[in-house]
Every structure is written in structure tokens, then in C-alpha cells.
Image (cartoon, rainbow, N blue to C red; front, side):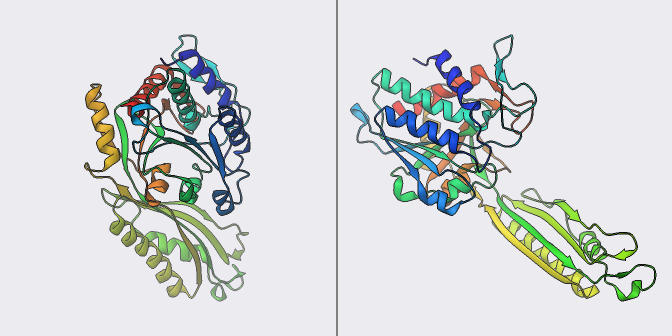
Length: 375
């Protein structure tokens, strides 16, 4: 029932619509027009745009009424994000000579993350409609700004959604694989303010901000803290002539953990070391902590996992539940009270110039979604 050529062409069309994070307007307008012309109720989530004003669009929500024997069944949400990472402007896709992959020309990412998920949802709807298949009420949710902080999923207006379970089409590993857990994620940014002085004539009158930062780093536990927790310093900036005791050093770092208590403990540790060092040298610390991901780990009795595992069993798919240390929209939906897992969308090498769509896996992933919404 899946139209292979149509699904692939749909994907090729989508990746050529520029939608780097904060600039999803083109894809949002495409989806609003496409589904409206099919006669569905389609809305743009204005509250998400208000909460993420840097984006030029809001989440897009499509309501598809149930049909046949499943018309009264619980609503299912299918979700994918509209944005891509840089460099993602002017994507030129092509199918490899062996017909196995879709790739970019190597100057940009491809955008399978997550245009593959969007294309899957569009093909699923087409198959349901053309074949008059029974299915429960469906809601398609297309989010903004996933790549820069899961902003759209966290900001979604839940008053616009009926569904309480969601399948996020933005994973890897092929049919049978589901992302069922993810981490807390903290961004720590700030600066240490010392005191400038002449490094040759009066170094004792200055307070070296970079020395303070070095003291703090030397006493921090970094990288792999335990099996659940990691910490990394990504940026330390101090740019002064060598004859000036540097007054200001800025920094950016992260703490992520699958265990909320361990993550909080590590966050307190790194901030504590920054405070100790600034006190020791008489400097000043300014910092800000933002939490962009919230840890979740669905148990086996969770309704969305139960539904997915039953589908896998019926179709002889080996179920593999994965816990990942990166972020997906599952984190935002779970935070908003929607049970969600991430399923494969068919892409690999995401965020790289070598990103590609595995065509056979992409089509198999569409089939597993069809099974989920018709059985």
C-alpha cells in the first residue's frame, strides 16, 4: 500500500525547503496548506511561537478524525520536528547510483533529521485515506526548534491536543527500536570578573580571571562522572594582551545525567568549585543555569511502550528499548504529560555533511507506523 516513489519524492521535496532552527516558516506554510487542502482541521500553535519568539513560526497541529471500527479509540499523536541544523540552507539531494540512499551534495547536511519523519507522516495519511483503512483519531504535531533546545515540544499548547500517547518519528536503529529514556541537561554559562592591572609593573594589584577559572577547572570532576552522568566544558574565553592581567573570563559548560539526583549533585559540584575559586582569589562570579532537557525513563508497563511492543510481537520485530544521552522531542512531550517514545525515521549520520537516508529502512519505518495506527 505504501507508494515508494511518492514517499521518496515527498522527502526530496521537503529537504529542499530551508528550515534551519528559528526559520521554520517555509515548512510550516507547506504543511498548513497541504493538510488544509485535504480538508483537515489544521492550526498553528500560536502559544508556542509566543514562548519561542525567535522562531518565525509556531508548531503545526493537524486533526485527522478516526474511521471505521477504531473511530472511538484513543487518539494517537504522530510527531516530527520541522527544523534542521546548520549548514542546512540550499540542500541539493540526490539518490545514490545503487538506489540505496538519499544524500546531499556534501556542502550541507541532508535534513533527514527530521524531514524523514515528516515525510513518513504524510505518506501514512495518504495510505490511510486512499485505502479507506480503519484508524483511531490522529493528531499530527510538527514542532519548531527541536535542534536548539526542544523548545517547540516544551512550549506546545496542550489545550490543542487530545492525545495522551505519541510516537516521535526521529530516531534510528530501524523498525523495532524505540528511545524510551533520556537525560536531564543543564547549560551553565557565566563569567569570572577579576581585576585588570599591568602584568609587568603591578601584577600584584590585579586578579587574573583566567587563573581563577583554571583553579576551578583543576578541582572539578569532568567528563564521565558515573554511568549516568557526564560534564563537559565547551568554552573558556579570555582575550587580553599578554601585558594585562585579564579581568574577565567567560565560560560555557554542560551537565547531563540519566539520574536526576546525580545530575543535581554534579551541577552543585561544578558551581561550588567556581564559587570556591572566586572566593579564594577575591574575584566575582556571575553565572546562569538553564535546564533544556528533563530526564525520563519509561517503565515497561507504560501504555505507549505496551502498544509498541504488542505491534512488534505481531509482526516479528525484535523490540529494542534504548536510553539515549541526547535530546529528542520526547523529553518535551513527556514533560507536558504525554507518554511518548521516539521511533526510527530512516536517517543516519545526523548533523553531519555525510548524513543520508537509508531508503529501505525509511519505507519499513513507514510500515511500522501504519501497523501502529491501524491495529
